[in-house]
Image: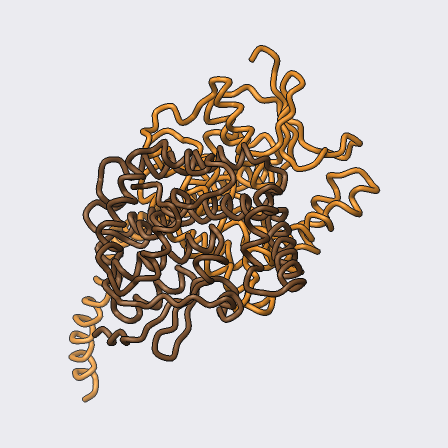
Length: 312
Length: 262
């Protein structure tokens, strides 16, 4: 516990600390439980990822999968599930299984298999983070692994073509998002007011879908229709990740919002001024015109009589 | 309006005595339990080529009227379309929980069973290969079992279970049973008074694990650690499976499977 623990994982963009769902899960859990974690994002160095990321290194112990990393952190007394009842702990396992079965295939598909997304966003991004020769090979390998996983687990008969499998996994993912939204309801986190392991996993899976800008975004659009899940992601991002990693997007939005506010205030002031001016104008001496009209009538009457007098 | 359930509805699975494996037996028992809970009569027919007859390649499958549906998920939906459902009384959050727990069982228990019977070399040699190919003559039996083994190992590798040792798999089973035990608590069924498809699924898997003789007893020991789960299995067996004399195949098989519950 004395030596700092180091986490190697993929970096982030678009306002997220990491783009990789498993890395994000571990980072979120570390923040929730208060574990001091030195985060190394993989960044174009020759310290190539050993196998799967994220990898936790602590005093010569190397642990590689998120579930094992979380177990290790719990044993080191960084436990975010301390207040949970046994039944809630059981629910956590069940919901994590649901996420892995139903949501993960669609997530993998959106990132790695959908041709437009992969070629324009995922592959360049990941390739830019890895050193040169490996960057030609590794994204392709991750894509092939993702496709393999989806086909082997979801692609048996009666689904015979990739498009049918895709349709099925997106249906499952949307149903899963709906179920999560119903479970979350209006509370801040899944089990009350403090975040737990389940919140870390849900955040890890949802945030990439929510934030990364892809050309083909059917899952993101579905997610945006579930406002409580969006609010959940945003809350965690603003409270636990102070967005030190290229967080310019929300900061930019903040200044834009501030500008907009100032503008609306100015416009309101202007319209108030105009109204006041209107009122003043109405109250101000416009009587002379009215008096003139009455005079004209009177003058008309008077004039007509002199005219009549003059005629003969 | 519920459509009538035909008299000759049949459930197909592999041969009970010689051929069927742990995971397939669990799935089949889950479907049988579900149909019993819905009060829908069904005959169990054992065929050596049941796996190949099934539309999705997985057993069990049911043949009702002129429709064939396989696997618990689609069967539950099919039965619901006919007007029978066990989970109508649940609210939305409970339905979400039920689906999550069903995924947990599929993810952990079913995968652990598959791992044990296809990736653990001892079990493969002594139990799985002889049983799986038993209806066929040599060399077909060896070829079919190797083919199936290769397929299952590929899948395990894709989901990351290939690197696990047997101890880790057993630990996962333990964790899953712990979660199920906590969720069940002291209630008779998972959602208190009424059984649902989750109860059928859990019963199918746990009962099969408890009553199947493998090389070692480690798997069944993990389940036996949780007394409320064994009581749950016994209760469902007594309520839904005993006293159905016409279903002689299941009873005869159970007694020969050295039921460890008695």
